[in-house]
Image 1 (cartoon, helix red, strand yellow):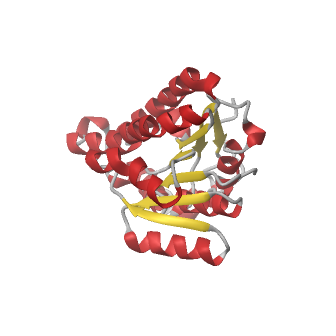
Image 2 (image 1 turned 60 degrees about the horizontal axis):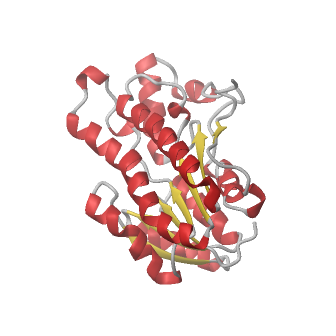
Image 3 (image 1 turned 90 degrees about the horizontal axis):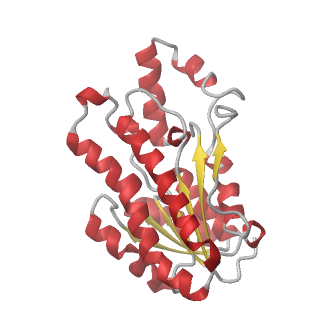
Length: 258
């Protein structure tokens, strides 16, 4: 990746996919600002990046709080300068409260859409002025294969991921002529704390042995690792991907082959 001193903001960067992306961007020479709700996790990530020769800063932020979301980009611009690269990774998964849509709690619906759809909208909107001024910018959003296919007992999550794919394609079409690319990554089941809960829930719901169920989650077999997602994010923000925009890439072990 041709970093050229670019500055990236990675939300949900304290663990899982976001942590892996932050580390990979830093290793490629990007100055990384990592945002998360957990100050303890943030400290660990920044220390690991620094120990490996990278440059990183941390900002504690809860994207369920719209006031915090609205100020995140300006706060993230303080350590290293304006944000050139935005990685919308933070999310609320269906594992937080899996149940049929008929039994959904309205507050969980609101929370899921706030973090998974409204936050990427607000953060992208806040990052765009600098990107447009310099005629260069990269927005990468971590969506899900559930933005392409559905899943039971995950109505809010599925709706939010379908929505964010549409949102990012709209952004891509509006800013393609300004040197700004907007793309999505759609992971399948990844070994994260959030997905661990969902996998266990589905195994119990289907009456399957947990280990057997996990092995059958993808045609390749088993689940992905966060490190399987990060290289695509690094590529999409590089100059090598300058002609790619409005796309959504499945990294799912072969679940979606169409």
